[in-house]
Amino acid sequence: MAGELQRARAAKGKVAVVAGPAIVRTGAGQHLVRLIESRYVDRLFAGNAFAAYDVERALFGTSLGMSSELAFARGGHENLMRAVNVIREAGGIAAAAQKKILTGGIMHACVRHNVDIVLTGSIRDEGPIPGVTTDAIEAQKVMREKLADVTHALLLATIQHSLAVATMLAPTVKTVCVDIDPSAVERAVEHQPLQSIGLVTDVEPFLRELADCVTEAESSSGAKK
Image 1 (cartoon, rainbow, N blue to C red):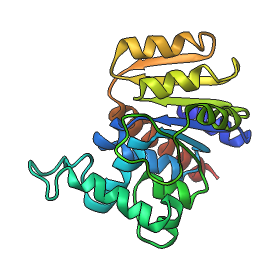
Image 2 (cartoon, one colour):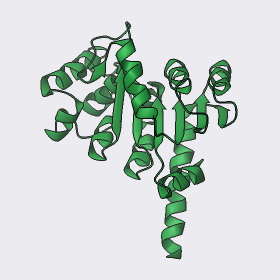
Image 3 (tube, rainbow, N blue to C red):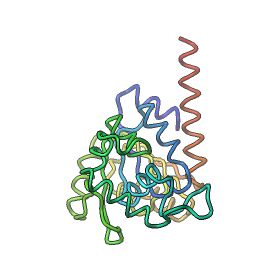
Image 4 (cartoon, helix red, strand yellow):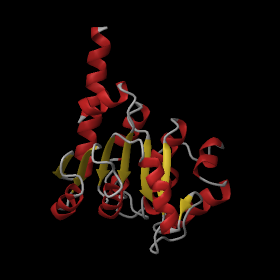
C-alpha cells in the first residue's frame, strides 16, 4: 500500500481517506497526521463525530471524555461539548486553526496542508460543528463531486461511511478497506470487487505500519539521491 501511495503521488493521483472515530479513539490519529504531512492524503471524508473527537483530543487530551493515559480524565464527557462549542465560537475548524486555537490533531493537519475536508452529519450527532453537511441528499452530492477524480481510497474503520463512499467510487479506483469487523470489510469490498483489498484488523497498527513504510521508503529514496 505504501508503494501505491507513492506512485499515486508521483502520478498526481488523488488519494481519499474515509475515516472513522476509532482512528482517534485508538490513538491512530498521529499516524494519519504523518501521512497528511507527507502529502499522501488529498481528501478526507468523515462524520461529525470523527471531527469532534479529534478536536476534543487536540484541545483537552480526551476523546468522548476518555483518555488512553488516565482512568478518569478531567472534564469527562463534558469535554466533547466544550470542544464543539470552541469550534462554533471560532467559526469553524479552519478558522480555529488559523486563529491558533486549534494547534494539533488530524483536522489541524488537514487545514495546514490544504486537504479537502468533507464532513457529513447524522441524527445521532451531539450538535454538528460548523462545516458539517447535515442534509443527506446534499451530502451525497458533495461527496460525489469530491470523489470524481479520486484514484485511490482508504476506507478506515467506519462501515457506514465506507459503504456510502464505495457505492460512489469509479470501478477503476484502487481501494483498501480496513475494519475490525469481517462483515464490514466484506460488504465494502463487494462494491469494488476488481480493485479492492480488505484487511480485518485494528486500524491503529495498520496506519502505524503504513506511515512507517512510507517514511522508510522516502528516507531510502533520499539517501540514494
